[in-house]
Length: 325
Ligand SMILES: Cc1cc2nc3c(=O)[nH]c(=O)nc-3n(C[C@H](O)[C@H](O)[C@H](O)COP(=O)(O)O)c2cc1C
Image (cartoon, rainbow, N blue to C red; front, side, top):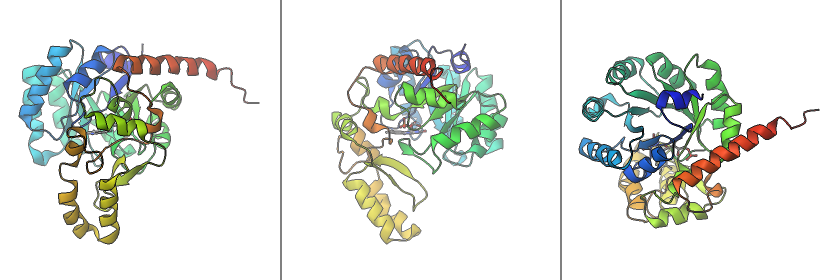
């Protein structure tokens, strides 16, 4: 039995990455109902919205799902999430951090969430955080490479996965960033992962409650058409190139860090919402990963997931026929 499935109580080792303004109840429930783990992208949301989404997800599925939380002690969100997990019996807490997971903070909250009966997933973007997550007691560690949509660092999935597989002592590893089909899944499983997380491929799923313009933009995206903005200000983020990203990159090229950050604030503010909810794919941030060119049609979540698993099985079976000499 696959350890990721056993730990999370799911049938397919596929996690849908949390996506702010995107992975709300309809997508999350569809993924969980199809046998994977849906994750509510509520890391930046007010607690009232988190509660509302947990209840909405429960109304659509009996299966396990997760809420994501950013491991930021300053926001006060961690204690509020404890209350939600306790009152709503949330099955899985998904902690994400760009870089710099704090051991003491993580241990404290992972212990509390565990005592409340929840499983804990951590998404790490470097090896140090993957190790810290395991030491602090995470049940599953995800490493995400810079191919992925949304906030990224500079390491690729190809290099992160085998390194993480080598250093994690007992915790199952899940790979994220640049996976959209069974070939990608088989590749990361060959490198030591026991499951995958996908985000971009679910952006264009039939059940995903984003503006139709976003799905059109993902379907139209070719290679070389995503860019990383925010490097100069310390918040690198992969998105589809458009008028907004051009403006951000122009400001970053022209101004040094502090002034760039000040000038970017009004440009970037609410930009994800502008794209995902309002459909402005030119002046909003259409976060998506480099794998977008493999997303060619709008398909139901279950179809996407079943195809990935079937392709992965076929690739794994075919590998033994490859000649090495
Ligand atoms: C539109 C969008 C929004 C995202 N928002 C978040 C977020 O709020 N928190 C988070 O941890 N990751 C976020 N991500 C990253 C995904 O959870 C996931 O790690 C990533 O999409 C995986 O790589 P892929 O895009 O190549 O599949 C976002 C990704 C996208 C495409």
